[in-house]
Length: 162
Picture 1 (cartoon, rainbow, N blue to C red):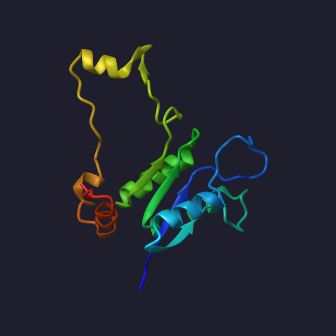
Picture 2 (cartoon, rainbow, N blue to C red; picture 1 turned 90 degrees about the vertical axis):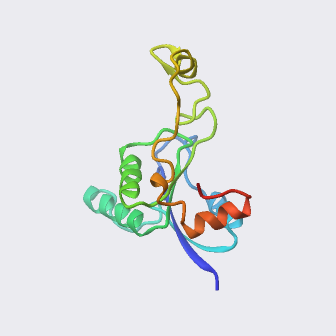
Picture 3 (cartoon, one colour; picture 1 turned 30 degrees about the vertical axis):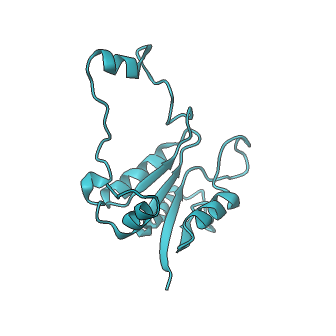
């Protein structure tokens, strides 16, 4: 029997008036995820698939947070700059120990090759002042090192969950 996982797709919701260059989750993105995770049955929780009234902000926020709470993984589309709602979804997931994965290609807003601090390259500044850069709370402070799904995915690639 195939294990089912639910993935919440965080990011922008295409409403029709946005910049056509902005990124949104597409059918092709979901097909790619299904192909990559073919050993699982995937249920996508996509806030773009909705029938509720988008003008009722309380309803929209509550619905999205409920979907985050019910998912196994939050996958954030960070190919473009995101707003406060996505940040709240990420914090809600973190609070409930739900893994958050971010799609942020090199030189995008959230994955810059050269980050600066007060006009100076941050990496150079850190090296110059013996500052070590490390991950903050990697994999939920180790709580996810024993997660069955992460270990299975790691095994497939010759890695461990840690």
